[in-house]
Image 1: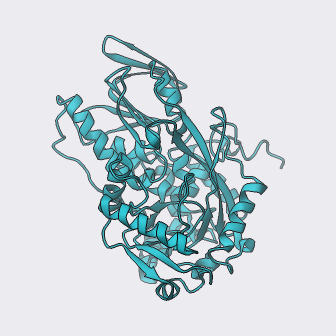
Image 2: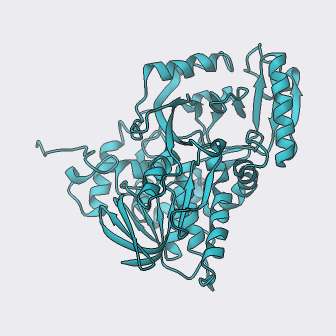
Image 3: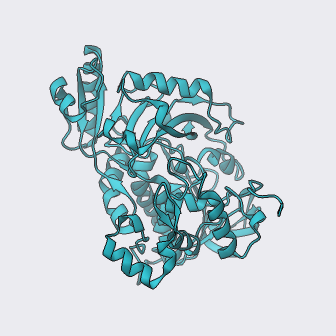
Length: 481
C-alpha cells in the first residue's frame, strides 16, 4: 500500500511524530519491528523529565529539552498519561562539586531553565530527610518531573490511530529503494511505499539510514542497568536525585516513579556496534548501581527490589553527541531523527513539533485537517475510583469487579479495555505496560496465567499462541491435562 509518510520506529519520538503527522491531511503509517510499540529505549529508561541544565547551550538538546519539559504536562493531561512535577536535585558531596553546581546553574540559566536555586545542606535535608550525611548542598530545579514513558508512547499511538494513522507491527525494515519519487520499504510484513520517510529507529537509526546510502553517522549502543524497588520504599526519596554529571552522562540517579516505586540507575557502558540487542543485566552492572546509591541514600536497600532491567541509549558518534534531526544529504525526502539519547524523552514533544515544521517546509502541499482529536479517552483505573464509582461501574460491567492482578488492583475489565484499544495489547507485556497487571511485587507470578487466558479469549487465539513479548516468546507449549 502507498502512503504519504512512513515513520520507522514506534518509540516515544516516533509515536509523537506520527501524532503530529496525523494532524495533516495525508496518509501516514508507523512501522515497528516488534510485536508492540515502546519496545526499545522507551520502555527501559529513567522516566525523567529533565529541567534542561545539562546540555551545552546552543545545541538542539538544550533547546528541545527546555521546550519539551514545558510541554510535557500539557501532553500528559491531554492524553491521560501519569506525570508528576516533583523537581530534581543535583547533590554535591564536596566543595569541588559545589563549583560544578555553579557551572550547571549558569548553563541552565543560559538554556532558559526557570526558577533554579543552589540550596544549602540544611534545606537539602528538609527536602530529603534520608540523604547522605556527606551531602553539602544541591542544585534545585523545580521544573523537572517524572512520567511513564511507555504509557506516553502508547497514548500518542492510540491518539494518532484515532486520527487516521496506520500502525504496522512486526514490520521491521530490511531494505529501502527510491525510484520515481517513491520509497519502497521492504518489511517483514510486505513492501510499503511512501513519498517521505522519517527515521526514528533508535539504536538502529544508522542502519536504516545506510539503506539509502547515508553513512554520515553511527550509533553506539550505551547500556544502562537499573533496580526497581517495591512501593514500601517510596518514603525514602521525594525528588529526582542526581550526582554531579560526568562525560558519560548524568550518572546513577535515585527517583520515585509515577506509580510509587523507587528506581535506581543507570550505569553507562558503551557496547560494540553489533550489540544492539544486548539488554541483559549483569552482576557487575547492578553492583555498581547498588554501591553508588549508598553514597546518595545509605538506608535505601536492594532487599526490596522487585525487578531489575537494562536499556540501551542511542549515543551518536558525531556533532558532539547532539541530536541529529533533519533531512538526509543522501535524500532530502528522508528525515533522520537520530542520536536521541537523554534527554530524548523530555524533548520528545518538542522534537515532534520540530520535525513537523521541517516536514511542512519540505511538503507544504499537505494542509491541516479540518478536525483533529487532541485528546485520548481516559483509560479506566478502578483502583483510583471511589467506592460509589466502582459500584456504578461494576453494575454496568461485572468484569470491572473481578480482580486479576492483586498487587496492583487491576481488573479483568481494564485488561479487556487494553486489548480492544486502538493499537491494543497483543501479548502479556503489552497488557502489563497498558494496565500494570504484573508490575507489582510478585511480577505476574499470580496473575500471569489469567492474563494469558484473557488474551487468548479476546484475540480468538489458542493459549499456546500467546507470547510474552512477540516472536518466539511463547509461555505455554502444549496442553498436559
